[in-house]
Length: 120
Image (cartoon, rainbow, N blue to C red; front, side):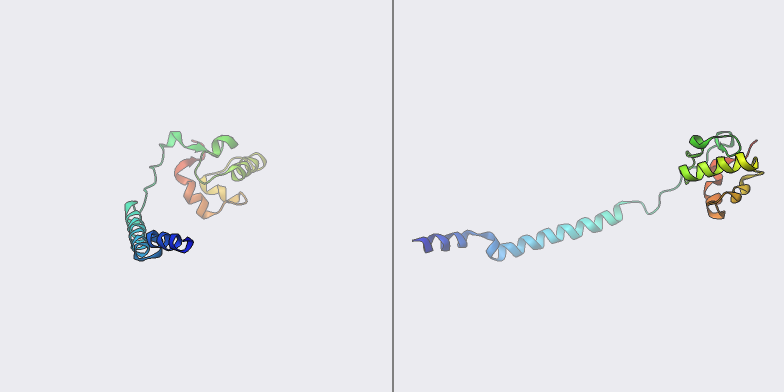
């Protein structure tokens, strides 16, 4: 009698026959479809915001560490390095003068140029 119950349960178990493979196929199709949809759902490129007007740009010759950190790409370490260099060597003659600060090179200067100014 115990064998009859286990046999009848196996006959009702959908995971033991073709229904399992049908479910796997349907779920797989949904997964692949979802991946294809999500790959095409996002824009290819997000445009950067326009640079702020010159009077709203961060002044590398006057602003402190806190304001310098508002510039995209300048973290606390670089902001501190700018202020330290400015205090030790005087104001920067222009934006390109930032290359005297350790850790700031041509690529960084070009990336932050739209957000900064050197005095008036």
